[in-house]
Image 1 (cartoon, rainbow, N blue to C red):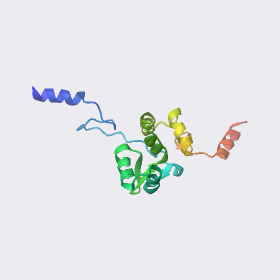
Image 2: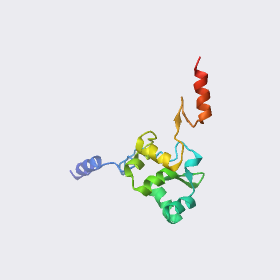
Image 3: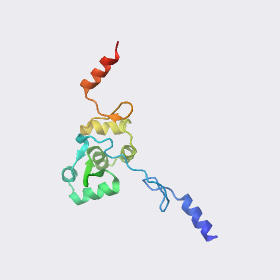
Image 4: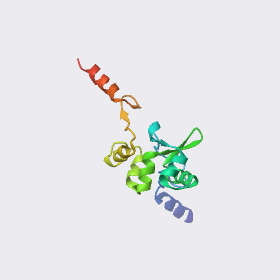
Length: 143
């Protein structure tokens, strides 16, 4: 009976913030931080520490615990947008950003405020386009 009871408790346990239950053999959902990658969104640990007025160690801990950055080539890279959301305490916007949302008004407001260009969708994948490239594409599609 205790095995069934503990199994029921395990199945009814809510998933953690990354979308998996403790001990479950599920692939965790990876936060979409700095994806797609754009250099203007990137902050080094030292620069992020200066912006936040905290130590580099604290910012590294935030990256690990709150998913405001990710490792690229063995170095921590902090998202300027995610750091702004985290420092403002905007949990809803940060959760949407980590889920991959780049279109909702709450997320796009932070992109604009941080001076980071929004990604533009093009088939089949995601690419960044300059305004001149967009006008060329629009001009090429007209007869």
